[in-house]
Length: 71
Image (cartoon, rainbow, N blue to C red; front, side):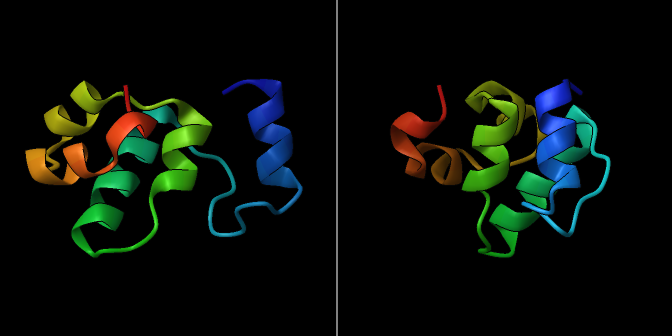
């Protein structure tokens, strides 16, 4: 995790997460999508691709619904 991401998390921008790896972030994103919760913040923070989400178990329809946010 880069310095900027660590600082952002340390500043409390995302209070639920203190130290998060990319794999954990992808898992959390898929969980949030399944529970119909906000996932855009983590997607943009980590620059997650559509392929990564599909491999992690997200449905195609959910991934496509994000449009151009996910490349």
